[in-house]
Figure 1 (cartoon, rainbow, N blue to C red):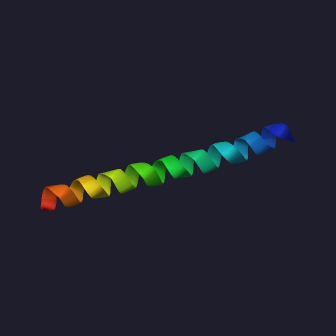
Figure 2 (cartoon, rainbow, N blue to C red; figure 1 turned 180 degrees about the vertical axis):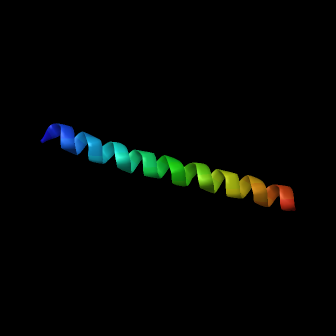
Length: 34
C-alpha cells in the first residue's frame, strides 16, 4: 500500500514540475515578444 501511495505522489510532483516549467517558458517567451 505505501509503495502505491508513493508512486501516486511522484506522478503528482512530476505533473506540477511540468506545469511550472511550461509556465516559466511561456513567461520567458512573452518577454522576448515585448
